[in-house]
Length: 352
Image (tube, rainbow, N blue to C red; front, side, top):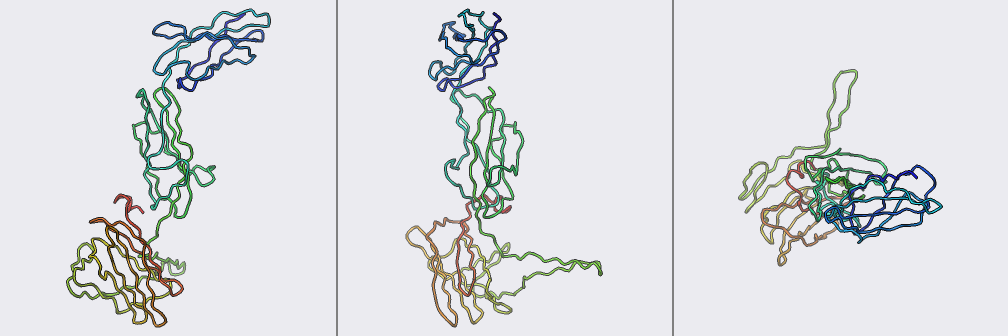
C-alpha cells in the first residue's frame, strides 16, 4: 500500500478542535489512524483510529493545548485491515482564536451615526500575542451584495479607516477582514451603519442655466443679503456674534415664508435668557435658553396673527465651550425645532 500524505495543517484553536485531511493513491481505505506527538516533550498525545472512507480525521476541542507545537502522522487501512506506512510528519501549532470587532459598534443591532463621515477603528486581541499582519475594510449597500468601497490590504499596521461621503437616510453595512502572522483569517461579519444627520440649508445651492446661443452660464440663487443692525453690547469675531447684553436685528428685506429654515449655533449661552429673536411684523419667533439642574433645554415661542404657541426641546447636556446646532423650520405655517449636539471631531464636521 502506498503512503498517505497529510495536507498542510494551519494554526487553529485547540479549544475548538479541527479536521485533518490527507491525500492517498491506492485501494479504497476503510479506516485511518492519526498520531499526534508533542514536538517538545516527544509525548504521544493521541493515537486514534476511525472507521471512515473519507480522507479526513476530526479531533475534538480540548484534546490539545494552545501555545504548543505538535507533529502529526496518518495511515490508512484497506478492506482486509492491512495498514499502510505512516505518512511523513506534518508540523503545526495551536493558538487561541483572536478577538476581532469594530470598536463602539454593535454586531447584533442597528448602529446609527449623525455624520456623512465615519472613522471605523478595530479591536484586535490574541491571547498569545500573535500579531495581525493585515486588514481590509469594505462598505456595502443595504443588500450586502454590492461592494461600494474596498480599502485594499492595509499592511502598515493601521487599524482605522475613514468612510466618507455617506448619504443621508441610508443604510450601509461595513466589514473588516484580517490575517494574522500565522495566516489565521479573522472577520467582523457585516455590521450595519444607518446614516441620519441634519442637512443645513443655511446656504442654498446655486442654480446654473447654460445659454448655448450667448455662450455663457447664468447663475441664480435664492440667497438674499440682509443687513443687520447691532444693538447693545455685541462683538464680531471670525463671523461669530458674541452677544452679551445685546443682539442683531434683521428687519429690512427680512421675510418669513413657508419652508423657511433658520439655522444657528449656540455656545456658552447665559442661563434663562432670550438668545434669538426674529420678526416680520406678522410672525414673531423667540428662542429662550434654560437650565434645569444639570440639563439644558430650549423654548421656542411663536406668535402670529392667528395663534400663539410654545415648543420645548428635550433635555440635553451642554458642556462649557461645546457648540450645539439649532434648526428652526417653518412648514405649513407651523414651526419645528431640532437640536443637534456636535459630538464628532472637528475635522469630521468640516467634511460633513
